[in-house]
Length: 281
Image 1: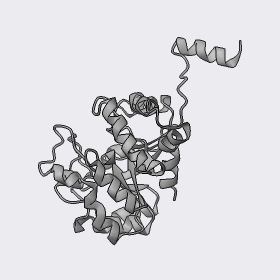
Image 2: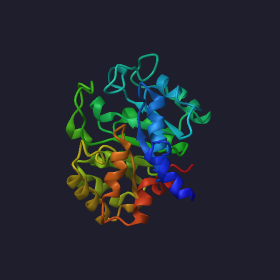
Image 3: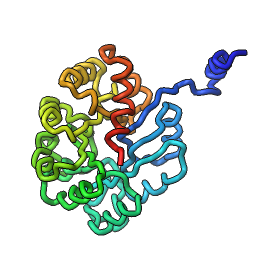
Image 4: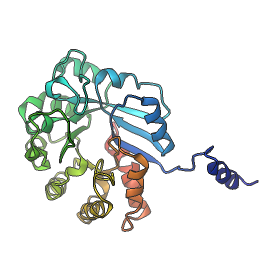
């Protein structure tokens, strides 16, 4: 029996996973059952992922899985907690970590990026001076910064959350102050799409992930089609990155694969090539 025939037979019996598309997931969070979560990612072709969650939970992921994990530092935390969770971001319950501790984490290669930046949940602009020391460290050490934008689901726990603080346009002041900082707009700024296009068209160090909007349970496929068409038509194909945000990973992948206007090369860029370039140290 030929190898391909054998794989097909095994797949029919659920013994072999034929899903082999190469995926860099730039937006995942911790779950109560990490083993199941990581197995699902691996089965879906995810070879690398950017993880942000409570610091204690995040550390339980280290060195255990085939998928390579990049570790992020979530801040500022409303009432000290991770949104949608009762977990404290840090064991001391503080909303922001000590800046010297953060630099030590960077120097010892314990973190790979700053994010998810929760400024919108916290009730401040992403350009607020409260966050400048962390941006300065990230710029100094060439760490990317991922900033939450757009909307939020129910029961997130951020009493000061404001929709108006989810516009990528609010990043302009921090981009100007930290011109070498690598920034990515999480959720592509949707529904503030024109603001995303405006910022990314002017500032070439800004990327965007398509987490949440690629989830058909959150954004219908037709709406996702229109969003992605606008982003591609704006010339942003080299700075869009795949992300699942703990949604159904295979559904999110298929949402991208269903975009008939994307070439195979463009899909490769979105699935992993752009992220590899963005996170390169």
